[in-house]
Image 1 (spheres, rainbow, N blue to C red):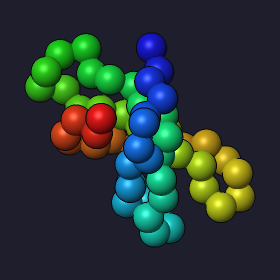
Image 2 (spheres, rainbow, N blue to C red):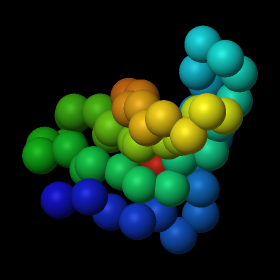
Image 3 (cartoon, rainbow, N blue to C red):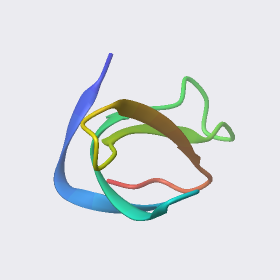
Length: 54
């Protein structure tokens, strides 16, 4: 289930830094978080974070 993040998370992308507002939490403690962000053109993308973003 997606989570809405209280504070946006900065994500390094191929086109610079973006802010992610949504996340998919890991099923297990040792798995990464996946965040969802929009690029300048309005397309949605995902990125993996190694640590807990919330």
